[in-house]
Structures are given as structure tokens and as C-alpha cells.
Amino acid sequence: MEAGKFPGRLQYTRAMMVLHSSRRRVGVSALTLVLLLAALVTTASAAHPEAARGTGGAVSSAAPAATAAGIEILRAGGNAADAAVATALALAVVHPQAGNLGGGGFAVVRFGDEVATLDFRETAPAGATPGMFLDRKGEPRPEASLVGPLAAGVPGSPAGLAELHARRGRLPWAQVVAPAVRLARDGFVVTRRLEAALTAEAALLAEFPETASVWLPGGRPAAAGGLMRLPELAATLEAYAAKGAPAITEGPLAAAVELASRRHGGVLRAADLTAYTPVWRLPVRFSAFGWEVASMPLPSAGGIVLGQTCGMLERLGWAAKPRFGADRAHLLAEAWRRAYADRFLLGDPRTSLAGAHQLLAPSWLERRAGEINPLRATPSDRVRSWSRAEVPESRETTHLSVLDGDGNAVALTTTLNGSFGCGLLVPGVGFLLNNEMDDFATAPGRPNLYGLVQGEANAVAPGKRMLSSMSPTVAWRGAEVVVLGSPGGSRIPTATVQVLLNLIVDGDELQAAVDRPRLHHQWQPDALLAEPEALAPETASALVSRGHEIRVVDQLGEVSAVRRSGGVVSAAQDPRGPGAAGVVRPDGD
Ligand code: DON
Image (tube, protein in one colour):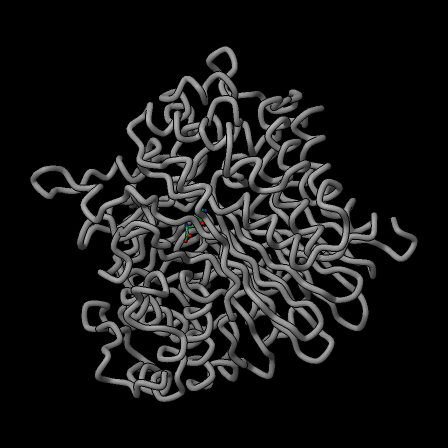
């Protein structure tokens, strides 16, 4: 064997972080290098640090200052909704590559026995058209759905976060917004992660002088360790604290968004912001391995992918197979291949060609599970999407997880889509606009930023919500509750479900469940992605001989999770990122 080469089709593919650091699409075009077999070692028995433990509540998020904001609000007597909103708003200040007021997101909210989901996903502006990302010859213009305000959907976060607080919060609104105001006005210390993200996206940010003047002071990315003050964003947050969402979605701030959009060729208008409404929706609910699970319904595919994965695995006897062995990895890949094939039919609930009631129907799950050959990978081009005739008609994102002392839970995932969204910071307002329009099927057959091939149900149309993969999730069994989610584009549902399975099938401690190396398959491209330590060499060879193409990537998702068990709460943050987990201890510490 040639040095460094692995027999079969095992390849090294540049990873998730690449996806954040360039506007290039990942997947088929990704740089492939040969993998050193010796690098593949299993961490099945690796020791994991303890998750933080307390009794008064728990927060896990991608930034220490944001987790601290959530904990501060819990200590002040806030509930899970108050703390989730405070954490999300703090992320909008200190984690601007994903935290936002100019983007959108989803929350799964469980208070007592009531579970609901809040959809504050962006919508296509009224001026959007199906061909807006095609040139005159009908050829795709990939940059147009990624860079500049034409790529921006109507922000959902201002109204969405206010709605979450209005429906479920306990503390006064201004008190919940206060930590974010303070961070923006008094300043926060730039983290290494932020400096790295600014450096990676410096070319994008430099395209817009409005953005560069804030985030590239003196032409260079804000440096780690320095104090960053954001006076315009502080003023916006102060107005938001005083007047709620209309402070941003009406009047001078909405007019400033329109002006910036017009100046750079966007179709986003003040009237779009004013008209935006978040929507409470019933969660996707399913039972799995003795637990109840609630996750995000359309316009996210996340809950459906989670439910289909668990449904197929239960039918295939997955839990009884040896942990870390080829059988389990094979069945996961085959279940995901089919769930993502079905995703092709999904879109905004008003245009989707299928929904949870069909794709999670026992008959459909049995059929899908029955197609799986336990010893052979099915090439993806032979896995067709769900067809209406076949089942009965019945039918740089960031995640934060919060539990309060009463066991109420909020799982909230929010995003600008790409790192720093479309790159345009609105002058006089201080926040960046998203590039969520790229989550639509912007050109027939063309993969999006995450390599997802999507269908007609997800075509661009005014007012429509673009299909998402975000999967905020709450699972419970008796008094035990788990709250989790992840960023990672198309890899979100697979990262989330693996952590869930580690907990509910294999009984891992919370931190170990989050730490364990992960796998991913999304139907197209037809490849099984593996973190470097996810597969032992013999497992990898067994999978290659079953027909899988394995590509090693350095990261799959970044999970934030909290849990309540036996009256004790614990919080875990993913070692894949520099986020933080915090808890409130009995003495209020
Ligand atoms: O909604 C979605 O599925 C994507 N816009 C999420 C983007 C994302 O996770 C980026 N972060 N890694």
C-alpha cells in the first residue's frame, strides 16, 4: 500500500469549518486528500470531563458571555423563556457571525406538559421572484443568494424573540434585554473564535464599507483580547428594550434597513419588516426508545429527519447492535440517506409536498426501513423521494439550550445562515442582514451552501419561508428532560440525533454524549462523512466493503445541551467550539 493511502474509497474532505470560512459550496467540490489510516482511532473509551451541575437551572450556548447573560437572568428569577431570550440577544452582540437581530430561528418550548414551537424563520421579501437568482439565460448566479442584501430574507428575530418573551416570559422585557444592551454599550472582550471568524470572512466584510467600519477597524479584523463596543447596536437594543419589536420593524430603523438594501441592490423593504409575523406551530412529536421527543416542524425539515431516523432505527433493531460497530454506522447512514431523500419534497408548510404526518407514518417508516439492506449500501441515485402514491393520505447558526429550576425548557436555534450572513451591516442600526435566501432551491438541481439538492416545494416565492435543517429539540421520560440542538447546516439533524441516541439508547452522561465523534450522510452527495475519530480502522474498512464512500471531516455540528435528571440539572457545551455551559447552584451561585 502506498504511504498514506487507504484501500477502497476512504478519503479526507475539508471540513465544516471551511464551509464557514468561504462562500464556496461544500460537498462534491470539496478538496479531497488521502487519509492516514493511522489517524483513525476510536474514542469509545475516552474519558470525558463532567458536565456542569446544579439545581436552579442551566444554560448552554456558543459563547461564554451569552451563557453568563442567561444565567444572570435565571438568578434574577427569570424562567427558561426569559433566559433563552437574554442568551439569544447576547449572542447577537458577542457572536455576530450567527447570533442576530437581522436573521431568524426556531424555538421548541416546553413549559409543564405543554410543548409548542415558535417559528421566527425569515421569509422571502414581497419583491422576491422565483428567478431572482438566475441570469437572463436562466443560469444560476450563486453569489447573488449569498452575498449582499438580495440574499437577505425578512428578519424574524426582532418579533420572534419578543413573542417568546410575551407568551412565556416572567421578568419585565427591559430586564431581559438589559444584558445585551450592556455588552454592546460597555463593550465585551473579542474572543479568539470571533477574531478567527472575522479573519476568515474579511474579504466578504470588506465588500461593504458599512460593515468594515465596525468589524474591520483600521482595515483589520477586531483582535482577540481587545474590548469591542458597538454603540449603534446598543442604541438599537435600547430602543428594542423600550418599545419591543416595532422599534426595529417600523419607523427610522426599518427605513435604514430599506435604504441599505436599496443601495446594494436588495429587494428587502421596510414594509417587509413591518408585515413579518412569527408563528406558533405544533411540534413534530414522536416516541423513540421509550422517550417522548418534540422537535421543529416545517419549515424546518429537522424534526422530520430526527423522527424518521429514530423510527427506522427502532424498526431495524439498531439499539441491540454493538456500539461503535459497522452495523450501527451502516444503518445510521442508510436511514439518513432515505430521510434526506424525502427532504427533497419539503418546503414552507404551504407549499410542501409532504409533511410529518406522512413521512412519520408507521407504514412509511416500515417501508423505508424494509428497503435497507443490512449488509450493503444503497447507492443514493437508487433511493427515490417519497411519492404521494406510496403512502396512505393520512399521513454559522447557533443553538442555545435552557432549563429553569421548575424544569421548563427552551431549545432555540438561530442563524444568519452563512457566517456574518450576507455581509451587510445596516448603518445606523448596527446589525448584519442574513443570507437565508440561499436556503431556498434557488436554481433547479443546484446544491445550496450545504450541498443540499432541493425540490420545487422549496422554490422562491414572496412571503414564503425557506426550508431549514435547524432542529431545536426537547426530549423527556417521566421527570427526566433533555434539551439540545446544534448549528451546522444540513448536518444539524444528524448531529442532534446522534447526541440524543447516545443519551437515550446508550445511557451516556451528558458531556460524553456531546463529545463523542459523529457521522453524517445526507443522500446527496453519496458519501458518509466521519469525524477523525468516529470510526475505528476495522469499522471503516467494513463500511467501505459494504459500499460506503467515507470522507473524514474535522467537525460535524456543535451541540449545546442541558439535562434534568433526579432533580439535578447539568449543562454541556461541545468541545468542538469555545462555548460555555452554566448552571445555577442551590446557593444561587
Ligand atoms: O436553516 C438552515 O438550515 C441553515 N440556514 C442553517 C445554517 C447553519 O447551520 C450555519 N452554521 N453552521
